[in-house]
Length: 543
Image (cartoon, rainbow, N blue to C red; front, side, top):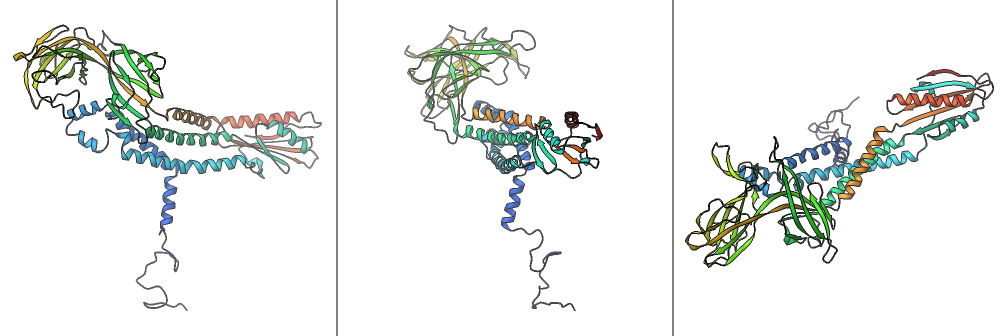
């Protein structure tokens, strides 16, 4: 008779719920220990589905990096975006959308993808290695049930049939099982799959190594000026987290004869046609001087660094005399083109803190081809009508006073908080001078030079990334075009004393080529045995 246990008895208390169907003393179904949760998390993370999802998220996360300006590439465009979108830009910056590839969320996706691929690929590679070393599977009992099978009789002895079978199926890895041969081929398909995923893992490592140990820097070089690869020579420098800033390659170069060509006619008038500059460079101080033509798709490679041409502009040249008639400034000054301006109207400043009796500063606008243009507001004003210097001109606004050079400031901005405006010039063309009011001095627009904006990139993971990318392509080709398949040949004595030969084949992928190959091999085996007396043709065949 069954007994019922009440509160205080030896059994389970009425208030204790072990869950439906839970055995006495056992945990409720679905209750996992911390170790169980860890194993479940690891299985989910290292599944191929998770790896594909993470790979998709990595590609999705890279989209903002291609649509929005990035600080590491062009900080000036980021500043311009702030100016044009003051309400949206701070929120985008909080989400690291101006620094996508160094953001915590992108790094987290990258790290999870690396862990997922590692946990997925390594066990798979081990299993495939064991499979390649294993013997082909035993011959099935009923070969007639295979997708392809053929049967015929011959007067040859079973041993002779199997010997000929080894010759016909020579491209298969064969194993003898009693009265039959079992063969397998097409291992490169799974090997290609493993190589593809291992290469993808190596590619992630190479990209991470390039980010950690590489560096990138931007600079602006005026035509005729040189550059030495030292930290202070860069306008902006972005080292990797493990890069040694003091171990830069000791090369140098000088920019000569920069040429910028623009489309003259048609609907694309004003668009850039080609940029090129002649460089002379040295790998190290005292090394032999070499030459290189720098173009958009022709970077300079020196000392493990690639020098890329990013952009072009103009540097108007000014001679400034102070109130005492002394020449206190005589050099070109880069003016930055306005974003979206088809005529390449450019803005810049000239700073002359040593002028007497007080410092001088100028805010200027450079017009490669001076003219009038109607703006979006419908008003017509002075502007550049073509990006090539067909009629170069400048306009200047002068300031006098303290330039506040003791504070860090951009070379492209003038701090006028402690200065007074002295006046505005007329349109100046090369050779024109402007005498400043109140005897403050004189400025002469003497001409202009071209300048190039360049980017230096040192990426030690570049060649390994190329190698792993090539391996990934090769592995993918093997996955797509190699057909894994198995074949069997059985030779047994028939009731009439003749040998019954059975040939069967199985392809792991659906392909008409599999059936054609098996039929060809079975026919070849039959033909090889025809010289044996009383040999018959195939008794039956199905594909």
